[in-house]
Amino acid sequence: MIKLFKVKEKQREDTENGNARGPCNKQTAGELRLRKDITELNLPRSCTISFPDGKDKLMNFEIKIQPDGGYYAGGNFLFSFQVPSIYPHEPPKVKCKTKVYHPNIDLEGNVCLNVLREDWKPVLNINTIIYGLYLLFEEPNHEDPLNLEAAAVLRDSPQLFKSNVKKAMLGGTVANVSFTRCV
Image 1 (cartoon, rainbow, N blue to C red):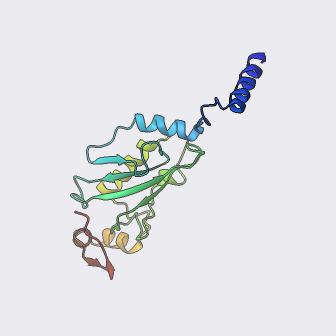
Image 2 (cartoon, rainbow, N blue to C red):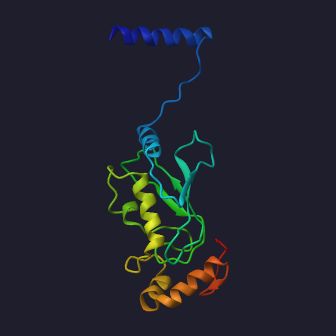
Image 3 (cartoon, rainbow, N blue to C red):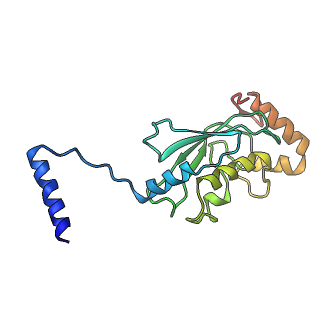
């Protein structure tokens, strides 16, 4: 306890004398956990991570998914992750920045993935979410949709769904909605 007081006293003296090295950047528990998650990432070959605000700003990053199979093969889909300071007790906010015709992603980019909602647990990590997103492109789920129209077409007419996905990925219009080319 006495050493602690001496350290505090020394810090105060250094600050008063102008010898301080500036404020130390303490990391939150969420930042420490996220740093661990990122160093342990095991991304599929078709996924990449980037830090648009620089590598020092870990709490906001992007994941690019380029599926190599399924309806969305050959597409490029960008997701933004905003990680709360209380991570992992609360899941990241994930948005799809690429407008996509998908039953589990609405036209505003909201994502319907169970591990981002009711099934989130602090033992899960960023890798779990990325694999979940990847699987949404490999196997879209019409039973838990955000885009009801796309889900109905997938359920009732898989060939039409496939055609609509291709049209949307090439920058066409599907159900009166214009898409931007993502291949």
